[in-house]
Amino acid sequence: MNGRRVLLGVTGGIAAYKAAALASRLVQAGAILDVVLTADALRFVGAATFAALARRPVHTSLWERVEEIPHITLAREAEVVAIVPATANTIAKLALGIADDLLTNVVLATRAPLVVAPAMNTAMLEHDATRAHIATLRARGAEIVEPEIGFLAEREHGAGRLAGEDALVAAIEHALLRTNELAGERVLITAGPTREPIDPVRFLSNASSGTQGIELAREALARGAEVDLVLGPTSLEPPAGARTARVTTAREMDDAVRERAANATIAIATAAVADWRPATTHAHKVKKTDEPQSLALERNPDILANLGAQKNGLFLVGFAAETEALETSAREKLVRKQLDAIAVNDVGGERGFGAGPNALVLLWGVHGRKDLGAGSKRELAVRLWDAIVELKAERR
Ligand code: C5P
Image (cartoon, rainbow, N blue to C red; front, side, top):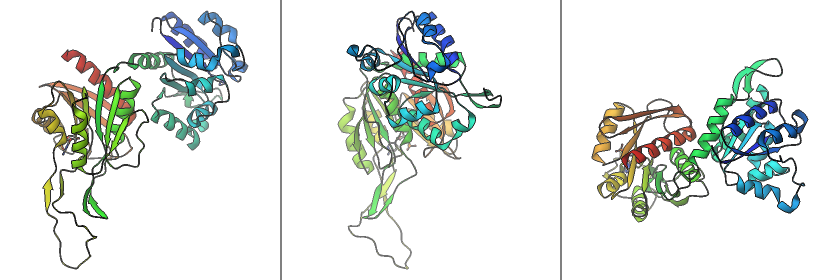
């Protein structure tokens, strides 16, 4: 953290007093600290505390030193923006892009990663509105430092207590570490299902939502990579910073990948590509009859194996969605498709497909293995990139 520019935003919750201890920790770790306090934060804590700890002027209004355009200057200088504590109100404003004070303007104007540490009453935290806003921020790439369960100012025990200082420092350090970690890398990601038409209205496909690949793309962008995303049919929105090619069939995905592969330095295949397609696609909707029908299928190209066969320095990561003999089949794929690593997930139970939680194990080489644990696809994207970066560095 030494010499890094950290912007600490403090909002108006009772836990605001804990932000002073955090500020001291960050300064001791060598950070150059800019503190922005909201008007409500100033009802709980004094600007003087933070100014003395940071040894710098603190910022409380859009309308001070207007000639410096404070929100833009602060937004550009920050290498990370951490909001500790974050109230339900501020979280809602950030999710909606409302900018009605200095802090919310800074967050809208910055390209630095955002760390948000919610702290509030349990009912407010569990309200659908708050949960949706937190999910929005997380989906945009913010690191949410989960509040703890514990003693609350209401003299109740529940969820909503500000995360501990160590967790806050770790989240800020992690955000700083990952910034620009992938600068100069060109990442190619396949995501989503493919759709193989039977006739104009029917197709063969699978339950993949594309979430894991989209989160990996988002995280790669947050770490400074250029990202090409080749995305099968999904209702999900890809991150704005990625160059996204939308495709429907496996053959279209294969073409799009081939066009982009030569330029890539890292490729990750998360797409659930249909292994077969109907041998013929009917030009018109097939009429219903009472006769039994059969469908002739032919093999689709294996996009990942094609990449492996001519990878030329490309660092190649595959996925294996399995329901049995998980790691044995994944290791077999690792070798056969000439991959540098493979992420295995068990799609047998509730996990795997869709927007829900996931669990991954990363395998490489003959014995290489790292359990990335369970979590949301957003969290696993962060952990998988941490592991890929480490593995790639070891190879050098
Ligand atoms: O062989 P299997 O389909 O289990 O391998 C899964 C891995 O291969 C995933 O990374 C998937 O994206 C990729 N794949 C592919 N093209 C196919 C089939 C799978 O890129 N036709």
